[in-house]
Amino acid sequence: LIFVTVVLATGLLARRFTKWAAARRPRPSLLQQAIMEQLTPEALAKPKLLLATAGSDAMAPAALAAAKAENAALVVCFVREVSLSYKVGDERRLNLSTDLAAQELFTEFLEHGHREGVPIIPMYDTGPNSAELIAETAAMTGAQKVMIGSSRRSALHKMIKGSFQRRLESILPPEIEVEVLESRPSPRKD
Image (cartoon, rainbow, N blue to C red):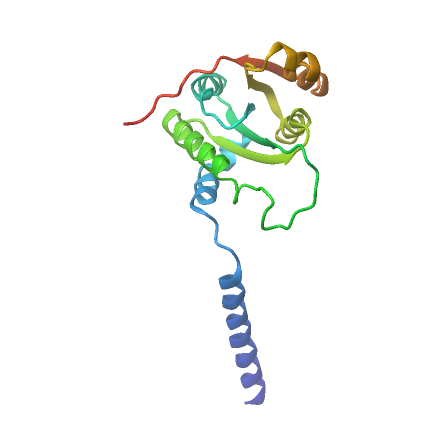
């Protein structure tokens, strides 16, 4: 009787602890749930094309058409370039949960991808050098091609900072092609 009581009490305590720990764990947001639902093993096994964007879905039609033509998944890379390197508390540090612009962008791309039948793999990062972060993302995801938008920077800016495309191409391995897409407004749903 003592043995059964100990086993039963241990089981009930373990069950109570498991429920308590599950309640304390943060629940995934609707965006995170949508991302996980559409990332099937088949989608992750497809070849990958990477679209580097600065927060606009203007290149979505061209990128989705390229991914659909190559039967590939589209990795949408949003890099928040942070020039200052200082320590901030975790509550103020930008991440996908706190960056509303990134959440909106990924939501739009998930809608576009669902409509076109193209799996979308969102990637978010922050740092001082966006070209390096995009190259790292391309290497981590195994992207075959990196698509970027045409620069709207002035000639003086390009002379001082250099061409983003040339910096990116110098970092990437030669087998990964960099393609410049012309941005077109994406079709809006009414």
